[in-house]
Image (spheres, helix red, strand yellow):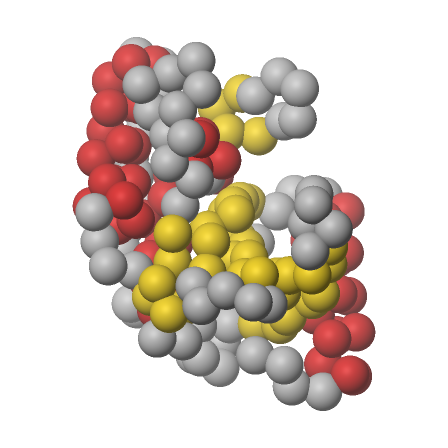
Length: 165
């Protein structure tokens, strides 16, 4: 494991949902919400909308998985303390980092920066609209199954195109 990464969150088995969410949110507040998180000198924002919850959507996107029905993902949640150090030390040669272009839901071009810690199958996703001067933490998650290879292949494809990070 990378020496600059903090320990994962200890989630007991069995666990009490409300307590685990409270503990995870403390980490989220400390490292993302209240911290002046920056990538390449630019501020990294989070989704601060609250929808059917007292917690921000950005928080749920880094601890849950699923599209229609969101479920707590313990592998994702335990690694929550890794987000900030992976962003801040993304130039470490042991990490795989690349940029892809995509259109957002409004048809605006944006850059998607992916920071992959392949040894632990964990990825952080930042988005940046080309015309904006900040980043947005879109998600972070543990890769399983086919996704492990898929993301590494995306990295190799981006590397062939040349540096873009």
